[in-house]
Length: 245
Length: 225
Image (tube, rainbow over all chains, first blue to last red; front, side, top):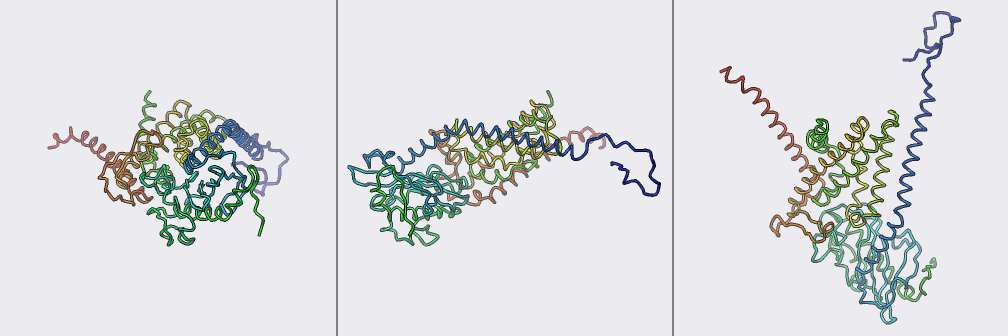
């Protein structure tokens, strides 16, 4: 307890003898010192994180790019087209209808000059644990050739069956039931999981993951089908701009 | 070197992170649905615990007592971020499997608990060992929990192992037409199985105590009769 002169009982008259203040540093000084130490720790460890980020970023981006190429191969077998897929691409600005808030690229597969399929990304914002990234191949006549989940945070062992690598049913993974369907064979309202009255299966205990992917792929299919001709005719390297209605 | 022995015994059994301290239940619930996920998270946890105990033990002279918790949280979060980035860049194949688990480690309060209770007061070698054995104790329980839940829930063990070792495959333990028992996979199943494990540990400890009591009582017993 610190006894300050003002805290002493008021009855005795103030004496002339001055009481020396306690030699310990003031609260303000201790606080300032603590704050500076905290700041230094924050700076040092932020620097550590920034440094690691700078070193690892090129490697991380390179492996993400390699992963994307591999995924394109999974949704669109290389035998179906003969053009240079990675060069025949248009840039897509952030598109709300596809759930994309970043610029992406749409790859156009052609066989002997004729349009075969579009390969593009899409996303479901409403997975059980946030965003689910998708890549789809949609044929020129508006059918889903195949789709894959590129990125998700669904519960391991429960909702992660949307990724065929984690799907326990190896013979017919959940994600493959969409292959070959188009809006002409599955009418708009039937492009839902069975629980919502649609035609696609979900797995018990994890409907939300299935619903998110199903609805997002339905939106993406419709989007690509409506713009197919325009997307195929745009010269490579251009940006696909949509005029506001 | 009895202290090192003591640290090991504490980490693995006496103060086991899950069974005795009941810490780290958040990741425990989320990923103990099968053995592979559980052990993967556990291994990443060992790395983070060893690193955070080492770092904080080394820096403990510079951390003022009043702000130790914010500093610990800062250091742990920074180390987890670094581990996350490093895995992504240098061990990308493993990252594809473990990636979603690494940020989860931040939610594991056992890391902060060991830093606060042990690393902040002990020299670097002891603190590092403590981080490792506490992590091993965590892996051992979360792996057991994952195995029991997977076995009851799906009738298999090691499903998903092919993501880590492409040539390996899951082992079907129960008959292939076993319908599965969903509750074991869902979060309540984690609580049920965990409760049984905690009870089992308490029973083993109780029995060991009983035996000690009996041994002490025995020499006296014939004399009294």
